[in-house]
Amino acid sequence: MWPMPPSDPRIQPASTATVEQAAALIRAGGLVALPTETVYGLGANALDPRAVARIFEVKGRPSFDPLIVHAATAEAAFDLVESTPAQAQLLADRLWPGPLTLVLPRRSTVPDIVVSGLPGVAVRVPSHPVAQALLAAAMVPIAAPSANRFGAISPTTAMHVFQELGLTVDMILDGGPCQHGLESTVVSFMEDPPVLLRPGGMPAETIEDLIGPLARRPRAGSPAMSPGMLDRHYAPHTPLVLHRAGSTFDPVGRRVGLLMLRLPPDDAGYAKDYAKGFAAVEELSPAEDLRQAAANLFAAMRRLDAAGLELIYAHLVPDSGLGLAINDRLRRASTRP
Ligand code: AMP
Ligand code: MG
Image (cartoon, rainbow, N blue to C red; front, side, top):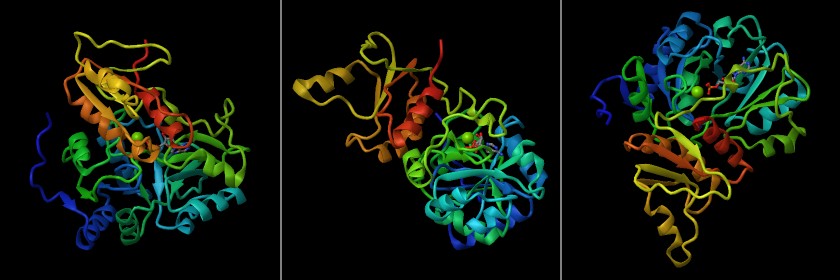
């Protein structure tokens, strides 16, 4: 089990005063973990390469994996890019602030380390009031990947951040649990048509309703190729296997955890039977609400990971709307043969 966080002045409930302190730390080249509507981010001044280097160091993140830059407004975000196609502008007008990241040709003011030397920069305007307040107070764009060790499950509470990173950061701003609980959807405008680089908290259908079909993968060798498409990511330490349609699984004699949207309907006690052999059960949303499921996903994976299990057995959810992003995370978390 993890220890309780020490009472340390670096872990602070978000308030006007602590947001001001955090903004001063960011301006001084420090690292601040901050709540966003997607997951907790590990933020630094995006225009300060030394501060950004500390993000990679603390996360153990490979330097080829570029960071998303957060800005207070669309204007501030587009200040970092060379040009904004009309479709990107439309998405920004309609869907920002929100869980959508746009990759656009970068200006030379964006340090190489932020974009891992790529020709594009990923920008987003978050809606979380604490993230908004911090960006406004810091008056610089903030580069922020998820505040976890590289490859681990993204944090959706301040406590998760502490568990992942301890006090290697200058401050953890506690803004309560994240509303979406899934990373942002990433769309690249580095090729035409634009490409869905990562499904996430903004459903692909919502984007396509506005600008038409997105490509589902970048063309080979295209500048939209993105290293964040690593196969294994967001993984618990406990092996996770996916349920295969039509197959049954008997956990008899083993400590196995079950992760699914909801248990099967309770006809004649079948649901209870189904759950019975499992040592721990996580239902993401008994009401089959994919938003609720997305918001619960990473915390449920963490609870199962802490339950001393041999195996986590997970069912995919329906593959539409947020289900696409939930299933993407489950597949990446799964153990391959
Ligand atoms: P995260 O780890 O949640 O911060 O997500 C960052 C992901 O956004 C990366 O792994 C990439 O998939 C994508 N990304 C960020 N910056 C760029 C960029 N400059 N070009 C292409 N993709 C990017
Ligand atoms: Mg991440």
